[in-house]
Image (tube, rainbow, N blue to C red; front, top):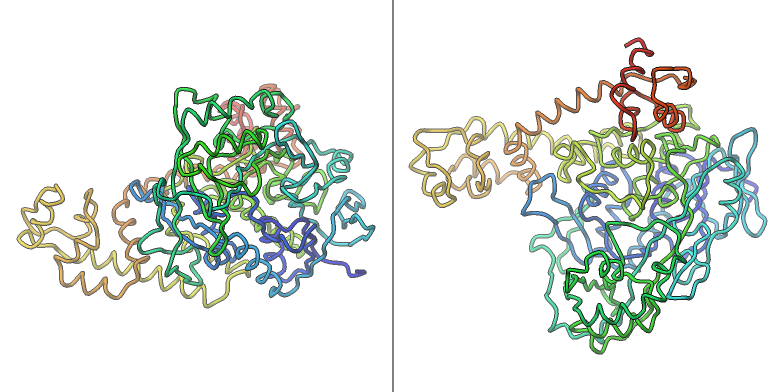
Length: 620
């Protein structure tokens, strides 16, 4: 207890676990403090990882040497690649997970990580010396010294749970809130706000009538998240779909007068894209039904997560309305849904390393920054843990750019623009999403993880072999010609124009509706070539050939825009002294303190003329 650590991580949710693992694996002596050792990496909301844009983040974490992908695969009960009917930039992997197994696997992984210690307690204060964070104090009065601290408090900071007219302190159901830290951070000069999120009832699956649901099985040939350990499922559990109806809506509306959301008792900002069921009824009053996903919580448990039915209405209203859903007539509730309010800190108070601007060597990651979602939190945790280690060792900071990773988009959005609602990643937020696909996260980022020290040589060799194999497939297609008499029947079947002469296979594969696995059947040479490669390599090669023009054009755009990222802005610049800047620009630039012209250009309210003024001032 008298040991001084390099890094202390407060909170063992998804952000805290990745931060602690990254810092310890890089060689920093690390202490992970959590209020409950039995709920490490608890899936407080739905038992799933990934999804649209989120799945890309999990694969990026894995490529950089983080644990989330491996843990998700080890605890998966179903795998699906979402958006297969759309372009590859939209394909997003998702797992349904065993909630208890997910937490267990994370704890085992952390316990087997060198340089990592644990302490169960609540952190109630930070230790500060000369404007720098030097440790923490816990509820029982123990002080731990450290060179850097990472706060990943999730929804626990002054957490307040609402069910109807009832409210009580809590970080999530069955867990007490964290108190004291927000007030101290205010005294240091931080600005905070309130946000809210919600969760649906949990139900006894034995009481449901599955004959009234639509089954949603996993993929026939399931893949996995991790590029390192191919832990593919051999059996899966299905999810199911049902729908609300007007009778359900009518019963829910009887509780609106006691709804904490409608009566104003909840002041926090809620997620616009993930509304509660009562919010859906009001906002989308023209709809007579809303889709619900019946998601199993694990391999062996009968507990069901009713996705799409998030609510904070009185429990008796929840129960009565739920029993009017087809298949739920005899449903037994394990626990009601609830809303939770908690403190967050506007992320414009952070550098892009996630170190705070107010207090040196203090880092924020996860929901404390106004984000929502396990994946967004985990990505931030990894970046914070890495940067804390790098700074202590006087190394250059680690910052991912917007054209390198969704994690780069996430953090740049947060520190540059801030957020007015719980921030969730979407593919639409990434302007270079054709480059940031789920299939190439390892090729994009593994070398970066290797250079940091989070990825070993064996893993790096695997990526190099994959890259070479993809290039070999493309080369074979560039060299091989297809004969009209052999391939025209297939082309006609796919409603594609027949060939009039020999054409390179790389040209034919770019046509709509032409599938690489079907096309090679008409070329013995290509068929033999592909037999030596994995499905992942073949799929990546097909994407690169089909979308070559789009990819090259997006790279060119990224290179042009990223030139602005190379123009650094002086740290001590006095924006008020630049008389040609607009008043709004002076205010926002002074608050955000962007590091580059590129970052300044993305701040809301900064005009092209403001950027021109900065460029002139910088001598450009």
